[in-house]
Length: 287
Image (cartoon, rainbow, N blue to C red; front, side, top):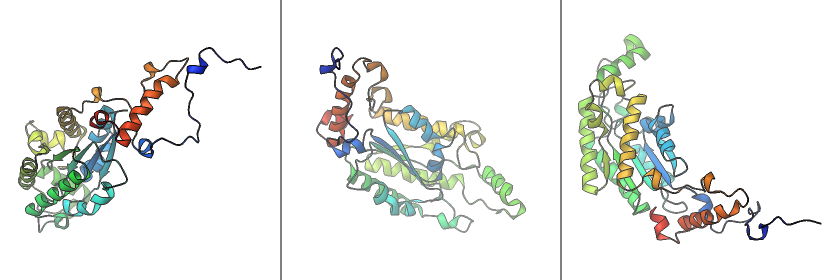
């Protein structure tokens, strides 16, 4: 004879493995997403000390940080990726997106990296097309443009010589002055489109010795440089109300789970997740 434990009748049990979700989207979007879209500086952001990894830690269990970084890409090539990375249908749009291009667009014509060069007017127009697509995906998405970083021309030369010795190019393929021109267009576009812009080009140069402190090879970021980007991105998200400490956990914190009746803690969580994914609660959607 089997004895029923006290209180078992009112304690919800775990669903069976074959139990279908009430809403498919709930299973697909347990957490909101923060998408990082950019070139190698974004691609490398999940390396040790990277700004993307730090962002994932900041929003641990609150949002999934998704890296879509493509080394060597400029804004012209990025346009080919938009509908694959940010589809108009079939998946929930990101809660927020960073767009971090320009370091390659600003490569100088007639130098070793001219294949990546994009004229500054086209760069601005390409950014505009990216932003318009993101706005078409979601009217509420937080969009953050990030300017190209400053360039340490001496650091770039040393890096080239470390790879190619005397065969290294004599003239810099990128200059800080030209990076600044592209940064200005990025800032101007953000103002025109009423979206957020993080001016990394200026911010890094506020610190004495930024060339060696923030840049590992004259262009890419050191852990300290990554920390600057992370701080600015988090501050921007906080300013629009996306404070990690105020966002809900994807599932209950362990302290909310009753050891004798664990199912109760998950009932509200499941309802919230389904409402968030299926769009049945405006309050939850807005986070």
